[in-house]
Amino acid sequence: MPIREIAVSNFKSFRKMAIEPDNFNIIIGSNAAGKSNFIQVFKFIRDIAKYGLNNAISLQGGVEYLRNTIIGPDEPFNFRIVYNLEEKLEEVIGLWNTIPVSFEPFEILYEFELTFIDSGEYYEITRDLLVISGNYFLSGQDAVEELGAGTISLTLVDQSIRYSIHPPTGLDIGDADLFPHLFQRKDLPTGRLIMNQPVSVPGIPPMEWIFRGMKVFDFDPMLLKKAVPIMGKTELEKDGRNLAIVIKKIIDDPEKKREFSLLIKDMLPFVDDIAVEKFMDMSLFLKMKEIYSKDKYLPASFISDGTLNICALIIALYFESRPVTVIEEPERNIHPYLISRLVEMLKDAARNKQIIITTHNPEMVKNVNIDDILLISRDAEGFSRISRPASKQEIQDFLEREIGIEELFIQNLLGME
Image (cartoon, rainbow, N blue to C red):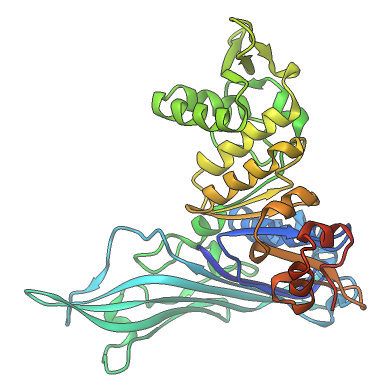
């Protein structure tokens, strides 16, 4: 799984939050418990990667709404993530000037801290650290010998990036031996993070690329139905507004069209075909043919919200190359009869990517494994907290008495102490 650990402190309704997500995660909780704030963690780090720290804070409503309103500026904001490098860059950069040592990364740890100053409306970066873990290898004439695991660290000190190598015990190499061109002073503008710099360790993708791979979807049924200009992005927008463009790209590829059709018909057997029509060479709109009709297609405005939502979900899960996919209320507008199929589809997609969803729907809770559930609730002080109901003995006792997990959810008993 890409994300092994993610944690924040003094962020919106959370004093402290830390989880180790699985490949499939379902986030539940009552109204105002903090589910949306949990999703904002992913949006915030993605926005930093896309737009920089200042703009990402502005998109959160500014410093005042980034931090917890109870804590205020008295405590710093902290972010930490441990990310498994499932996709590595092809090149392996080695040491060729003295000894043939190479480094193959497999995990990164990234964390930073913002301390609030003056009246609390301003901040400064007081910690910024990237640690890349990997294996060191010694290449000989006839074989490659693994020397053990070590790390390479990048730290922000006085607005300069400092590199340091921590090789396996017994490997005598210095910082400048492995990557001599990296160990030079790299000054950063004030307010910039390491993750926004074009500096990295050979063999790992850019930090910006890693965090931009976190996509948060929240589909709007009205936008799914609208015609769209022919000039637009071919990656699905977070609200699904460009669904027609994305589907056109899929159905123009015979193999992808076949896969898309099979997935649609598995969920919606009455669908015979989904097509895209060009209107006056300026826009595209969806249309659908049911098995009950001969050649008549229904325009998007006549297609049900649930049908289009399922189309968007299939694309997000199977046709978007996103290692981490977050979907808010994927069951929206979908009949309860189809919920079990939807859950199976989410689990199937989670074999190839990390899936995180939020829901209020008891049918969703009923059809997932209790080990996949993460509960967000508020404590007596008003802070959001996250827990796993499966770890609570009281919940296990209820389940042994054949009380369904969905009943405990409806009765708001999953957060019991």
